[in-house]
Length: 124
Image 1 (tube, rainbow, N blue to C red):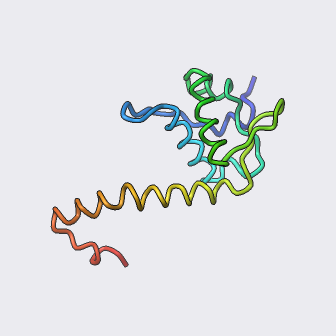
Image 2: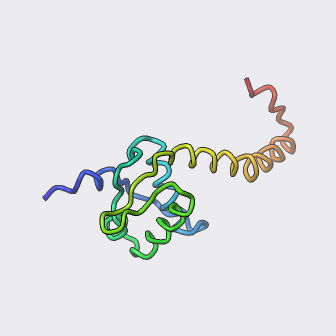
């Protein structure tokens, strides 16, 4: 029996020991939304389906879904499943931009300065 279409979009995950698995699962789903694999309004795999597919406890996936529901990236229709919010891509981009500017960019800038790299030469 072939896998349901929404499970075919799931890719194998390589987990990083330095980051909580539930965050990695949430990040993976966000990447798939941004890439268009999950479109606004589309159903995403259930907690049990995704857990079984990627080999993690369903409670871990549930925690990921809680985070994404809180961020309003996905929503739950009781008895039917979880779905991608209409503005999910915008929410994800804004969240990731803010995180990049506040957390990653200062470290990058500092490292470039230590190495004597003039960033204006590389930014066009």
